[in-house]
Image (cartoon, rainbow, N blue to C red; front, side, top):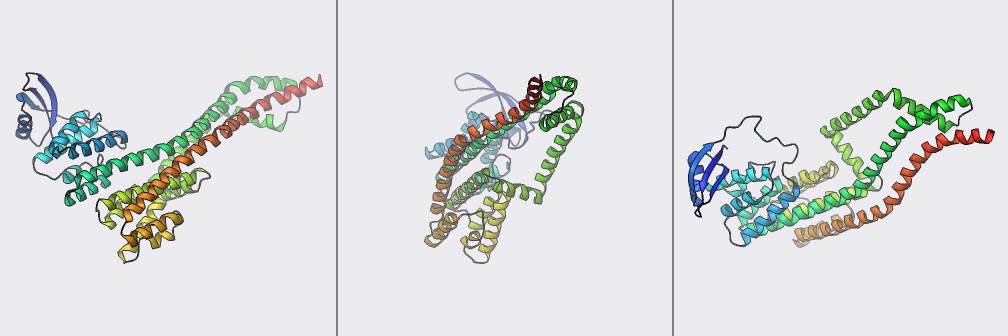
Length: 401
């Protein structure tokens, strides 16, 4: 949709400048007049490739989208119309990408297009889960409740992801520090002792020979190390883009020691929370499973969810194929089975999500208290080996004197 620049005067006599997205110039003029604004000028903004906004990944931060969902639910509960609520949020949001999308959605709403249809044209901003739940809320007449569930869902999802990130940040940081310390010692410190060791004309310990050889490699063959690093990065990125490679990487994430269980619990919490929100919003089960598979965050778990959907189409209970999946603990499958029997599947899934979200939080706290001394010891050990390799020949020389 084209964007128009305008100069207007409010009913209070204040002059304003701004931009508006509309179908055409008459539509933009009507929109401004509906806001009780006196229009002085309205010109279409010419766009080019250089003037367009380019986005890499998700253009809207999760926290901005959470605030949007929460504020939208509050406005609808207060009796504000969808059109006015959408306009208010477009003016208040700090996200430029979300503001543009909401302005476009507002223009569609003024033409009588349903909100769920309007947001469907902005898949990069509004995920499939949001669109499907909004459509179900419109059909059931419970848009307010649907927006509340969406706000809770995105808040819980963001909280779980942040907890897992916090558990991974510390070891990654220490690992980078260890590598940086080793590279600095091998590149800048160890070479200063090479001439002294050669003048000693003594038998060097094996550990000293190894460190000297490694230092020499860093000094004169650094391009090989750099090329190796680039090859690893390219290979990883290429593997992620292939179906089989992405599956194997996600499988490794679930099997890696210590953090594998944490990733598994986080994925189960996300699966349960998503499925519960969709089911409670009256989204058809098979459609809900398709969306859950997309947002599961792990190809292995997604494959088992797809198998469960295929089994459900054949008239079998949802819990049966999941019981055979090693990624779903008995607690999850038993709660799903109870939910199917009692008709309270959304409640059972919500309880599962609550349990695993709490479990993730407790696991992160335990990991932090356990990993901190271990990683400090690891960093000290790595640096200590290099220092020992340098000092041992000097002690030998001192003893011989």
